[in-house]
Length: 160
Image (cartoon, rainbow, N blue to C red; front, top):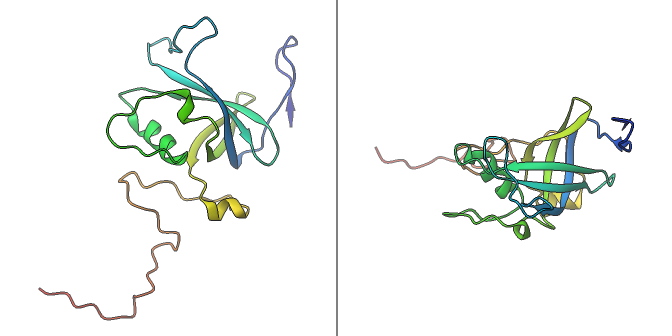
Protein backbone atom coordinates (compact mmCIF):
# COMPACT_ATOMS: atom_id res chain seq x y z
CA UNK A 1 0.00 0.00 0.00
CA UNK A 2 1.33 3.47 -0.88
CA UNK A 3 0.56 6.53 1.16
CA UNK A 4 1.11 10.03 -0.18
CA UNK A 5 1.26 12.51 2.67
CA UNK A 6 1.54 16.21 2.13
CA UNK A 7 2.08 17.24 -1.48
CA UNK A 8 5.70 18.27 -0.85
CA UNK A 9 6.59 14.82 0.59
CA UNK A 10 7.24 11.76 -1.57
CA UNK A 11 4.95 8.74 -1.34
CA UNK A 12 6.15 5.95 0.92
CA UNK A 13 5.12 2.33 1.24
CA UNK A 14 3.02 1.16 4.17
CA UNK A 15 3.45 -2.40 5.43
CA UNK A 16 0.33 -4.37 6.25
CA UNK A 17 -0.11 -5.04 10.00
CA UNK A 18 1.84 -8.12 11.11
CA UNK A 19 5.26 -9.44 12.13
CA UNK A 20 8.34 -8.57 10.06
CA UNK A 21 12.08 -9.28 10.25
CA UNK A 22 14.05 -6.03 10.38
CA UNK A 23 17.71 -5.09 10.14
CA UNK A 24 18.81 -1.80 11.68
CA UNK A 25 20.57 0.12 8.90
CA UNK A 26 21.49 3.18 10.93
CA UNK A 27 21.05 4.72 14.34
CA UNK A 28 21.30 8.37 15.33
CA UNK A 29 21.47 9.96 18.76
CA UNK A 30 22.16 13.50 17.51
CA UNK A 31 20.40 16.06 15.32
CA UNK A 32 22.29 17.13 12.18
CA UNK A 33 23.37 20.26 14.11
CA UNK A 34 25.08 18.07 16.75
CA UNK A 35 22.46 18.47 19.51
CA UNK A 36 21.28 15.35 21.37
CA UNK A 37 17.90 13.97 20.31
CA UNK A 38 15.44 14.86 23.10
CA UNK A 39 11.66 14.79 23.41
CA UNK A 40 9.85 17.96 24.43
CA UNK A 41 9.87 16.52 27.97
CA UNK A 42 13.66 16.14 27.93
CA UNK A 43 13.82 12.35 27.44
CA UNK A 44 16.72 11.30 25.19
CA UNK A 45 15.95 8.97 22.30
CA UNK A 46 17.56 7.12 19.43
CA UNK A 47 16.30 7.27 15.86
CA UNK A 48 16.64 3.86 14.17
CA UNK A 49 16.27 3.28 10.43
CA UNK A 50 14.95 -0.30 10.13
CA UNK A 51 14.61 -2.22 6.84
CA UNK A 52 12.23 -5.13 6.37
CA UNK A 53 14.36 -8.01 5.09
CA UNK A 54 11.70 -9.36 2.73
CA UNK A 55 10.17 -6.27 1.09
CA UNK A 56 12.99 -3.76 1.57
CA UNK A 57 10.59 -1.21 3.08
CA UNK A 58 12.33 1.15 5.52
CA UNK A 59 10.73 2.40 8.74
CA UNK A 60 11.94 4.90 11.29
CA UNK A 61 11.62 3.66 14.87
CA UNK A 62 12.36 5.87 17.88
CA UNK A 63 13.65 4.19 21.02
CA UNK A 64 12.99 6.42 24.02
CA UNK A 65 15.60 6.10 26.77
CA UNK A 66 13.22 7.02 29.57
CA UNK A 67 14.68 5.99 32.95
CA UNK A 68 11.09 5.78 34.28
CA UNK A 69 10.22 3.11 31.68
CA UNK A 70 13.28 0.85 31.33
CA UNK A 71 11.26 -2.23 30.26
CA UNK A 72 10.86 -1.18 26.64
CA UNK A 73 14.57 -0.47 26.29
CA UNK A 74 15.44 -3.79 27.97
CA UNK A 75 13.19 -5.76 25.58
CA UNK A 76 14.60 -3.95 22.55
CA UNK A 77 18.21 -4.64 23.63
CA UNK A 78 17.29 -8.28 24.26
CA UNK A 79 15.58 -8.52 20.86
CA UNK A 80 18.73 -7.37 19.03
CA UNK A 81 20.90 -9.78 21.03
CA UNK A 82 22.69 -7.18 23.16
CA UNK A 83 23.55 -8.56 26.60
CA UNK A 84 22.09 -6.43 29.35
CA UNK A 85 23.94 -6.60 32.65
CA UNK A 86 24.25 -3.58 34.87
CA UNK A 87 24.44 -0.12 33.38
CA UNK A 88 24.33 0.24 29.59
CA UNK A 89 26.05 3.03 27.68
CA UNK A 90 24.03 3.77 24.57
CA UNK A 91 25.82 4.43 21.33
CA UNK A 92 24.59 4.02 17.75
CA UNK A 93 27.21 1.32 17.11
CA UNK A 94 25.49 -1.24 19.36
CA UNK A 95 22.36 -1.09 17.16
CA UNK A 96 23.65 -0.85 13.58
CA UNK A 97 23.51 -4.10 11.62
CA UNK A 98 21.47 -5.92 14.30
CA UNK A 99 18.26 -7.80 13.46
CA UNK A 100 14.98 -8.19 15.30
CA UNK A 101 11.41 -9.26 14.69
CA UNK A 102 8.91 -6.42 14.97
CA UNK A 103 5.14 -6.28 15.07
CA UNK A 104 3.94 -3.49 12.78
CA UNK A 105 0.67 -1.63 13.10
CA UNK A 106 -0.74 1.20 11.00
CA UNK A 107 -1.79 4.37 12.82
CA UNK A 108 -2.56 7.77 11.29
CA UNK A 109 -1.38 6.61 7.87
CA UNK A 110 2.04 5.53 9.18
CA UNK A 111 3.67 2.30 10.27
CA UNK A 112 4.64 1.83 13.90
CA UNK A 113 6.71 -0.98 15.38
CA UNK A 114 4.80 -1.77 18.57
CA UNK A 115 6.43 -5.01 19.82
CA UNK A 116 9.83 -6.62 19.30
CA UNK A 117 11.23 -10.12 19.67
CA UNK A 118 14.57 -11.71 18.84
CA UNK A 119 15.16 -13.56 15.58
CA UNK A 120 16.91 -16.83 16.38
CA UNK A 121 19.19 -18.54 13.88
CA UNK A 122 16.66 -21.39 13.48
CA UNK A 123 13.88 -18.94 12.72
CA UNK A 124 16.05 -16.91 10.37
CA UNK A 125 16.56 -20.04 8.25
CA UNK A 126 12.82 -20.37 7.67
CA UNK A 127 9.89 -18.00 7.56
CA UNK A 128 8.80 -17.10 11.06
CA UNK A 129 5.13 -17.65 11.90
CA UNK A 130 3.04 -14.51 12.31
CA UNK A 131 2.08 -15.46 15.88
CA UNK A 132 5.19 -15.11 18.01
CA UNK A 133 5.14 -15.27 21.82
CA UNK A 134 5.79 -12.09 23.79
CA UNK A 135 8.85 -12.08 26.07
CA UNK A 136 8.11 -13.03 29.67
CA UNK A 137 8.34 -9.86 31.79
CA UNK A 138 9.81 -11.89 34.66
CA UNK A 139 12.78 -12.73 32.45
CA UNK A 140 11.99 -16.44 32.28
CA UNK A 141 12.89 -18.19 29.02
CA UNK A 142 10.00 -18.74 26.66
CA UNK A 143 8.89 -22.36 26.19
CA UNK A 144 8.38 -22.95 22.45
CA UNK A 145 6.57 -26.23 23.24
CA UNK A 146 3.85 -24.31 25.05
CA UNK A 147 4.57 -25.72 28.50
CA UNK A 148 4.44 -29.38 27.54
CA UNK A 149 7.19 -31.38 29.17
CA UNK A 150 8.45 -34.60 27.58
CA UNK A 151 8.98 -36.12 31.05
CA UNK A 152 5.37 -35.72 32.23
CA UNK A 153 4.80 -39.47 32.27
CA UNK A 154 7.88 -40.17 34.40
CA UNK A 155 7.66 -40.33 38.18
CA UNK A 156 9.53 -37.70 40.13
CA UNK A 157 11.08 -38.31 43.55
CA UNK A 158 10.15 -35.32 45.64
CA UNK A 159 11.05 -35.49 49.33
CA UNK A 160 8.49 -33.96 51.68
